[in-house]
Length: 113
Image (cartoon, rainbow, N blue to C red; front, side):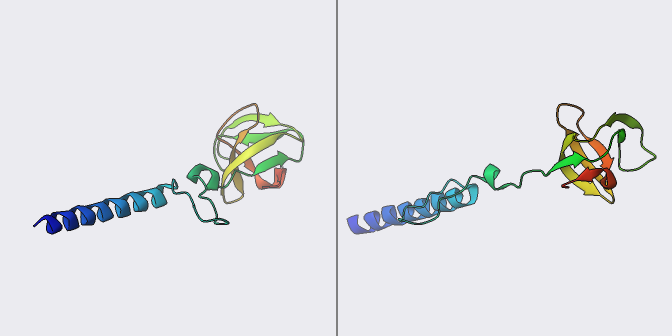
């Protein structure tokens, strides 16, 4: 009888350890213990960084949406940087460094995007 209780306790421990290991592996909190093994990289560090686009002309309009039918919110000049968030057709959505966020600029006026 006592052996069956020990077996059940060990089986429960094995299930708990497997569950913890699976959770750690899926959340990125698992750490490699073998020498030379790759260490886990946090999920935030795995995300690709937004490209930094650079305006290539002076007096470039930035708009409230991806097209000429959207209102002009302002203008930027050559060298202005913008973190690209996405692309829709020939328009890049992004956040201007030190300025407006969520703006759209035509790809013809951006480099490095």
